Image 1 (cartoon, rainbow, N blue to C red):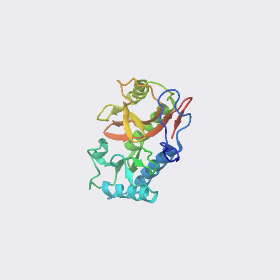
Image 2 (cartoon, rainbow, N blue to C red; image 1 turned 180 degrees about the horizontal axis):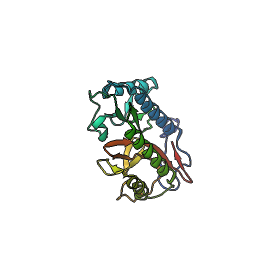
Image 3 (cartoon, helix red, strand yellow; image 1 turned 120 degrees about the horizontal axis):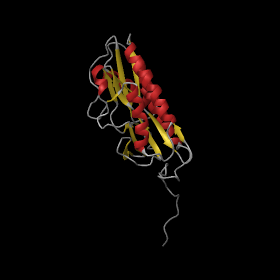
Image 4 (cartoon, one colour; image 1 turned 135 degrees about the horizontal axis):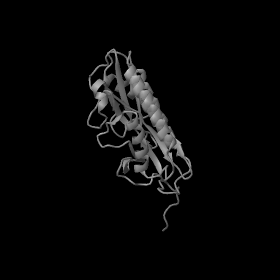
Length: 237
């Protein structure tokens, strides 16, 4: 007796590493990253003197819940003051409150109902803090330059070198605990192809998070966006 005929059920994103990777980023990935960016913006909007890291985390959670997101693939990082110098899964938001002059670093990692993962980091500044505003503006400019230099299949360590050279020239020191500026991102897995660092010569195809995390003159700043390393071109999500 033959099996009953039915639909063929396949993953929403067929991951094909190498030069035959999809030309355009999967729509589900685009949606996940839009949600990550929106959630980070919601956290920045909640920044006021006296607001705690946990309260900012709750504002982010409220945004994600309203958008139908029920899960994240690692904790939501919220760092104020000295806590902005650490962005790691072992450092969750605390009851530390924003001062009259402060900076918050927010890193958000939503999972959509379809199973796609997003990853976005943004910083917000409150009060008269020119050093922080200058550091964030300079890092953002370098970050955009780095994104513009992304090429399909380029080795991860080459992109790291291009970014590190500019960061060093502008007086920044890398803060990442694993000495990288990003990582691979696949459906259901981060870090499968490891990190954008000095020792990883993996060819970059598919989705990678680019996230320089640095300090200058005592001010820690970080920005993060996803890049789709497609067959013919790179797309910043």
